[in-house]
Length: 283
View 1 (cartoon, rainbow, N blue to C red):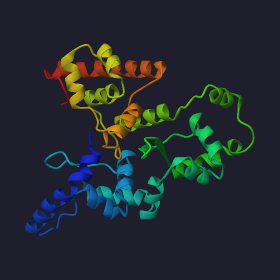
View 2: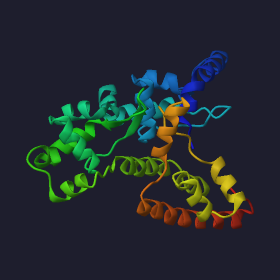
View 3: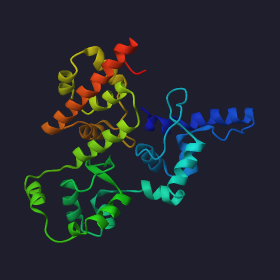
View 4: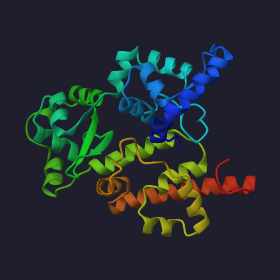
């Protein structure tokens, strides 16, 4: 798993080493790997925008540096920039707005209507922040909101559907579950290794559910070692981190069953790999 947070923290050290090596070697290698900070600057993105580009698979990491910090080939940066139609297009793809007020403004509706649309699962967050009051502030891709406005103009005015009224009456909030599904899907797309894929699915299960699903302690150690890090922007303060941790774990029983079934399937493939290689863990 590529550790986006580690990449950004360690990037300055990595870049100093790379610059020194480039100076000794003439600096003529156009495919030199650069750290996250330098890569973000070359793409004209902020750190959070670059982290989102990596999260969404728009920018793919190359070989990690010593210590695990992700690095990026300039050829990959050029590819991402060209595929997006230039720096402005790339920035538009990763632009995010925070909170119901800003998201509602993009849609041209009131905050209360947007909140209902989001809670009922019509739009999916791309990330989260925990504010100073320990409240969750959801992030939404601006491009997806604009697409939704074009695709579903009827939802931007008039009365809510019967299904939405039922969800609202039940005080349902599908935002955490929808975000988890998106987050897990993006992580799975970034690896083909069976054990790493199993680790992604295991990381979403509450501890008691994981122990039931994976009774072998040795396997749980492997899965824990391969677990993906929290997403970029995950809070460091214990009180806020505790709130965010709740977002990372499956909650409703049917959601937990889905992840357990998916984990069982993934572990079958991982165990088969281990039988063929004679080793437990990724190859």
